[in-house]
Amino acid sequence: MRSDTERNRKYLIKAAALLFENSPTPVSLAEIAKQAEVSTATAYRHFSSVEDILHAFRAQVGSELRDFSAAQTTRGMARLEAVSRCWVSLVLEHGGAMAQMRSHRGYLERLRENTGYLTPQAEALAEPLRQTTEELGLVDLGDEALFLWNALFDPRDILDLIKSGHTEDEAATRLVAALRGALIGWSVATADGNQGT
Image (cartoon, rainbow, N blue to C red; front, side, top):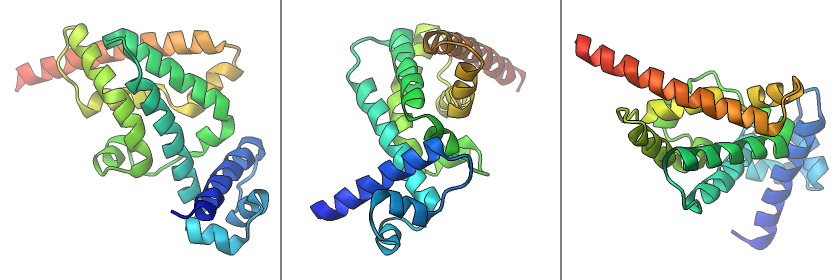
């Protein structure tokens, strides 16, 4: 990609994040282009919609999480906790823009269709989750472990916890503990279900 093209793309993603962080109302592609100081036509050459920009932004944040996960030297629950805490920090760093992602389709459906912006996040978490279930003596839950993590670490809910008076550390600690319990409960229910068939 040419340097000016790549620069414009980065400016548009950054502008969208900034606008969504501070705007209580929906933001248009034209407003994002204006904030990025590029023409609306240039914005449309890069992204077909505001949703496309948000997907690119979420993929960028997911890549940060994936890089952090890959650099970890711990395993199992310790690694999963470190990656999950990193995610909470990223959500707080990027604030409102992280809470803008909504889809009418479920997480597992999007994950299994390799929806682009979910891929780096899933890559960051798949191995720590697998190691954790192994460490806890649970069955490998595969994509369903990612499903549980996603349900608990939704950016909107993380921001809600912080707004309700919890510190970042408190929120992360409680969410990680809840995830551990969810993995155990899900695994037990899965094993019981398999025995009943």
